[in-house]
Length: 598
Ligand code: EVA
Image (cartoon, rainbow, N blue to C red):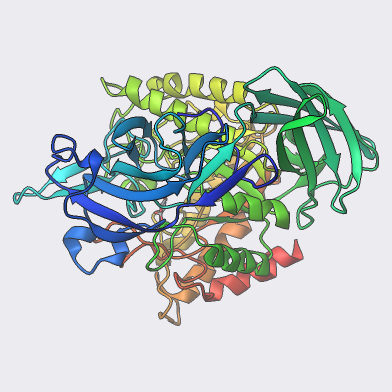
């Protein structure tokens, strides 16, 4: 593996090309590929687009739901050796993969939502064609992030059984890049920002794999140099800084150069937004000013393409989110493709970045625990915990390393709805929070989205969070339909309890929502109708507006999305404000009215 996760760029020192296109693919239900030498070439492949989620491209169920090992192969021509490193970079491979170059094992990577970056210089042949073979695997277990299990049917066919509420899309779902970068190069960098009146001070640290001098130059949007400094650690001062703000994604360019006298060894241009984020008392502050988050929990999910990144879908989603007056989304329940963050940086959009720690409860319908009173499957006890924690740690490390320099990322979420009602849960999460704090020099707030049963008195993990994030379904899983007046009453009772804790801690709603069938209208309303979705949100907003420590509302979900089939889901989760093909339901207008007025 290679230590750098920097996004590819092209200039006089660095180049890249994409290896996206049609690759070969083959399923390996018996897991015999390695023994049969498939790493040297697939025996009976079919064609498959890369990137893509393979599931919704097929017409056969067995292929859609395939669970196990699946292999990819492609070849690429490599030009002559010019002394630079050759780096192979997958945006992600879900959920784990072994990679061979010309038959030589080059890497193993666990975790399906962060880049797999490999220095393949020593495995390639220059001036010739080279073969890449990937053996990916999409099984879920209780040490994988996200968690789940695999069920074997009597026929021997295996099915993924997620402990979470989204389809287990898999494959090489993000772009593949082949990079040539200098032998001595920038590996990583950090920036810490302080504001002094209208000026800003940016402390940077540049990590390289050599000893040559580093210089940093900062350019404004017009290309004017506004500051420069020398050394791997330095301070850039900006007079009258143009701050990065909600709706004003002003980006400077921070250029790192490695110099050997006059000779430029490496050059990397990074985009930089000047902004600070912190919590103070029970408020969230951006550039020292209180903000209130308005927006959505999302998924990377769309018809046909599944979880594959598409600029077009992302663009439509930003347009729709902004049209409703939103300014924030949570990357529920995994880090998204890097391009989402770049687009958010440019638009001045806020992101709560979430690690794929979801399904930490032994339940195939864990969302239904939203109605239960204290899920306790003792998930954080037993032999699997240590390995789970190791994978979780790795996922946190890779997410923060990848995303720490995006101005749009204002917080990291380290879990979604684990059981938190016993001491072992606290013991599990405490070192992970401490670890995450060592990774982010910007000291962004850390949080985790809490289950219905995680509440004052029972929860053991809220104390680890800089702000409390609640997933709540009063009026849906809890006292829905005609009982909604009761839902309002017990919602208020819970909020009264949080009021005692939140004198010094902000609270954000990270989920609340009601399944709504886009074709359904009913007067008086019933659950699943568009009118009920409106009534549900009106009630929830009435309650939230009465508690001034509430610092944000991210509704569940931006759009309808695919899940595993079952009696609780109608061809997917229908809590979208927007349909799966990206048209508004009635509730979109309600949100628009509310958010544009705030
Ligand atoms: C739901 N509820 O029931 C959502 C899930 C989500 O999709 C949750 O965090 O509590 C989960 O993944 O619609």
